[in-house]
Image (cartoon, rainbow, N blue to C red):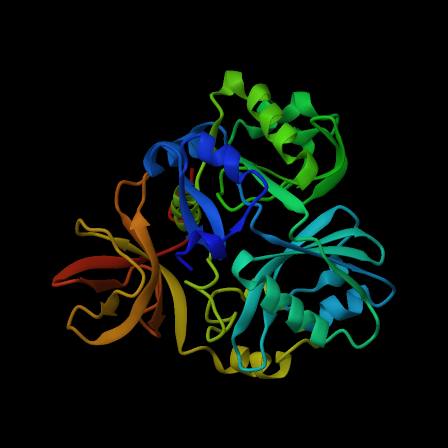
Length: 366
């Protein structure tokens, strides 16, 4: 997909190019990976406020008396616990023990939900859910009509409050409100994010995206607000130990292996729930764990993990140099019983063997 002609463009593509962003192909879209440096952008979000344009993400709306029933059948978490204005992290299990995608489910009101899915999986997820829509739930794919801005960081609420009457500092994690934002009606203002730094995600119609983007930066000028690219998004989510679909979870990884037992509720039936319940009972043979390097080096996905004696016990799925901790951190699947926190392991980085330790998540605790 290196040919620019085949890449989809988000609504503010030209704005990012004019800001000097380095644009790269990501999930079929031409996306801003950085504006200055990953390190600078990472620290802006951890310490202040930064804005990601993540308009490549997918949004589906499900409506009707059987909408909740369909969501319950295809997703692992218990969406019956949602109330109006509440969001929930979940995943779509496949029939073979793996994961179709991870997603966020928003309850807008009774019989109306929004599902936010990964950009690379929009078509796959849509087909997966549509194929199981046997009871006439009204489905619409609004992915190409909505821009999504993630305003993240400890100063986000204060910086954005002048743009809305919604009390941002009172919003609790994974709740949302529909309200006027930057003069635009019915913006979904969601206290969610992928950074662990606090903040909001704003769902805005494409036609209003440029105006809202401009007003966000005007409102945040005293807070040294900056645009942030996908490079820093990756290092921020890795410091928190958040999974990235395609790296840490995919069609072959079980939610229980991936540490997503907390969003896998056996109080209801869902796709492959019987086999997953059995897996829970018997215990998994490998587990996604956090790993911190003791030796100096940068871990990457695909690197081999061995015991101190050299026996191969797993592989890394994501890795980076943590800007806040100043050391290499990674996620990876390791065979039991070496998954226990504090277990020393070896990461094979090209021709070097680097000492590392299995670590509790998140790596960065603020």
